[in-house]
Image 1 (cartoon, helix red, strand yellow):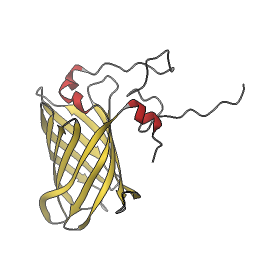
Image 2 (cartoon, one colour):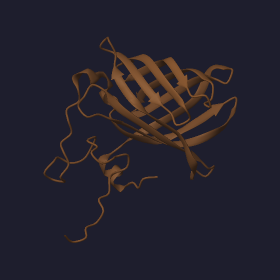
Image 3 (cartoon, rainbow, N blue to C red):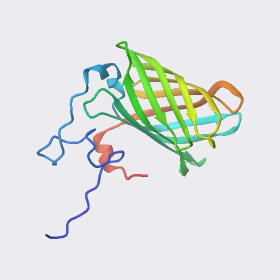
Length: 202
């Protein structure tokens, strides 16, 4: 066999991922599965989002950050979720990688109930319960588990919503003997398939 070029995957996509792309037969990819009916209230989240945010806390210097969030699905009744961030220099260029999150968003018992499981490389796992109303999701931690060496996080509150087509969110946190208070906020724009193809992985 002749030597071929290495296939390049779009930003935020991994081998076998079925979150985007052209129909099978044109590029060799499989068609997207239909979104599970129980995920319909969360359908506005599906896709890749990119934008800027601000992090701050009494124990953390306020900084701006860049973020990419991906909500995907494979036809089963949950969304897979991943988030990666980079702290920024004052001129807007990337300084260094920052927080990562991975997990799943699941429908709860009632039609608009939501359950979310998130894991962090800092040794923290969060279980949220909440509700989706139109294009807004409000979540509160039910359980926060941590490893022996992880920061003492005790509670979080997350609010996500669509604002003029963008995904905006705010996260409050109680940690290291501090009460629940603002910690993160960002506004992210939906990334098109064309933008994904043209963007290098960071």
